[in-house]
Length: 409
Ligand SMILES: *Cc1c(COP(=O)(O)O)cnc(C)c1O
Image 1 (tube, rainbow, N blue to C red):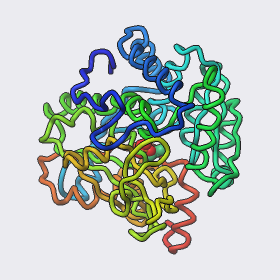
Image 2: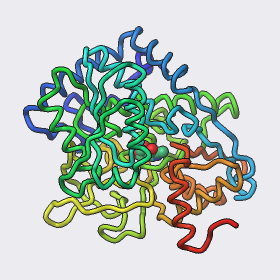
Image 3: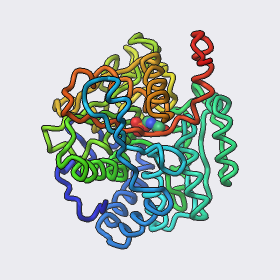
Image 4: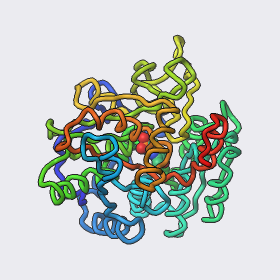
């Protein structure tokens, strides 16, 4: 994919970073200078053939692109409906789509002459991808992570440290992802002269939702090309899980102006749609402003952020990317949710039928496919964006299955 040659066919966001009523730039004035500088640098880089060539080279040689589009024959036949294809983002270096964005933003930081990188991380996946790429490019790397998350994800903390990153535990608030974002922002306000902040999803203040989306557009661009080669046409439906929304918007973007392709985002239904028990922002959320942008947020009557829950840490966040809110209003993208137990069913199914261990995040998209594929005709094609691999989740899956008395013997 070349950012230079792909037309900005939807011309969103607008100059102020808005996707209709969503998005924008709700940050303290002190941050506006860095955000403006980043936007200008990105606008220039996007048109620079050298930047595009370097990005393409790194995506190929370091990250492992293009990823395959794999026909899941056993799963398709068992479900007895649509032909199911998996977009194998799980095969990328570090095990998920996140490295697409990190590589792009590190190259951007290099152009800006910034020697220090900071990032937030929840479960640690974005932190690991960031620490990894910083090691490769010899950049100083500081990862902010909630103290509670550090304990839950100690292996990822160790991985980041092996790559030379400093991991700072955040002791404020609930000591989880949103608190880590706050701390990273605080750092950036005072360090932006030599520091670039790599946000991990299609969220936050403009220009982040746009940059992160663009870095993942390669997923959909490849799906389109591969599907043409395999079937000579576009798929009928594409499904992806939605945390902040980066893997989903990356897989969908290429098809937004192809109305024959149905696009479905799957949120985390957790233990059901009760306040505090899920992370399905379109089910239980309202419009509001949170951590830099206007979007759908899980919040209480007073505007305080609700606690969230999901079996998959990567989907466990109170806000959804603003571009998703826009396309939901437009009716262009449909949204569904899968509960924790639906996701576990998806996880088990893919292991058994195809010998592929999906991330628990991606398992939400699989759970949707289990219900949807049998409703589709055998000549129809359903693509699941397999955002990551499940090695990181096997212990948790084992704990949950043990509890349900369902551990495979
Ligand atoms: C982080 C993560 C997600 C959720 O993030 P999005 O920005 O919504 O894509 C999904 N899948 C995997 C494997 C992840 O690591």
